Each structure stands twice: as structure tokens, then as C-alpha cells.
Image 1: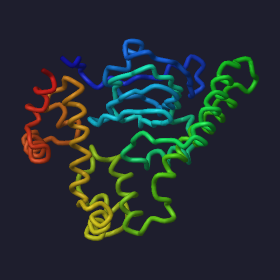
Image 2: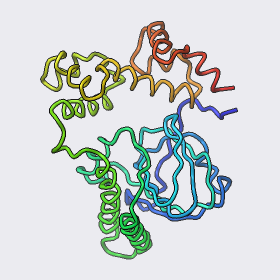
Image 3: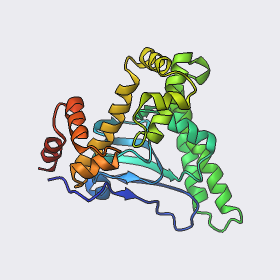
Image 4: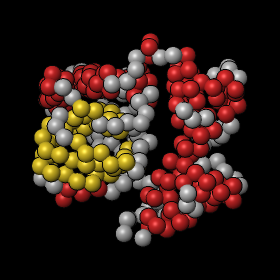
Length: 285
């Protein structure tokens, strides 16, 4: 039986010196050595992994990913995740809070959606691993007068290196068509407002374009309508809460901006094929 909590657990950064950046490196024989990571949770920080040896499997928002050397992984603060399997894995990992993260990097990371592991070339792995080792050494030099500044700057450099690997596998903003640029802007607004803004016309208004044109752009870029994307984002959050918490369906509907509980229930079944109660009961068994 999956352990349930009233709400999805959120892990906070273990940052005794309030630097906003924490880094470590460990070798795990199996999941028993990292049991706390096996429980589904969110983080209140941006989390990165660099797998150097071995393998590990992780579940992120109902998708399972298996990492093999050499790979990097970034996890958004809002993503629900848990470790499924570890086999003789040597992992460098670091966490950085939003306040410490360079604004430019934050914008770039927010645009990566969905987030998946990224495979690294030998050269890319080498420079990232060396930078991680340097950051780890710097994190131990607490006597330095500018310790926090040094750690912040080196941590952001490490984040930038991994972010650039993600960007290398996506389209450059300069190469995006008008349709793709508008779709990207819409998705950014959707991520920030999906619990309160449900109408395509409201998103179109913030983009200063017509609803028809927004829908045309999004459909040409993704194959789906604006309404589809809104509903899918809301349902992802609903499934997160139904699966990982013991909130009632009515509580979840309200939290997601649906005062009409019956409408939310019909919408969930229409999109997922099962009722919210059935989905919750199945995954709580």
C-alpha cells in the first residue's frame, strides 16, 4: 500500500548556512541506502542529478525514467517524483533555491517542459563532472570571506552547464516560428495560472491576441487546442493529488479552482476515462 499524507510532501533544502545552494556526491548500492527518496514528494528547490556510474530509475509525474552513465537530470520544484530503483550508482546532486538561481537560467529552466533525463557526450560529462567536483570542494571552504558569493556563482555556473545541455536538444528561441513562440508564451502563462484561469480567452488577452489566433497557433504547433492544454495541465495536478495525498475529491476540485464539484468529476472522467474516486481508490489500495 502506498503511504498517504494529507497533502503531497514538500522537501525543504538542508542548508544550515543559508547559502541557497547545496551539493553532494554519494555512491548508493541500492535503494535501501536512500530510502527517503522512495517516497513521492515535491521539493521547494531546483534539483539536479549527474549519474556517473551504475543505474537508477525515477518516477516523475507518472512517467518512469531509467538513467545510465553519463546522464543529467533536472527536476522542477512542482514535479512529484520518487526513486524506484538504484544499482551501484555514483551520483553528484545539487539543489539551488529560486532566489539564488540566476534569473536568466530560471527563465530557461521554466521553459523546459516536460523535463526528461538528458544524455551527455563524453566531453560534456567531463566538464560538468569537473565543475561539480570544484563546487563540492568550494562548499567545504566555509572560512572564505566571500564563501556565500563563491558558492552561489559556482553553483549557477554548474546549473548553466546542465541547462545548456537541455537547450542543445531543443529549438533555439531564434529559430521558433511565430506559432511556436506564441505557444511557448501561452504554456508559460498556463503553468503559472492553471488553478485560477481556465478560459482560452483570458490567456489570449494576456498575450494581446485574439482567442481564435491563439488557438490557431497552439493547434499548429502542438496538434491540440488551447482548451486541451488547459484541461491536461489541470488533470495532471488532480492526478498528483489523488495519487499522492488523502485529500477528498471535493477538496482537490476546490483547490484546483472548481467550485462545481460535479463538473470537475465529469471533466476528470471525460479526460482520463475513469472517475476521480475510482482513480484515487485504485491507487490507494
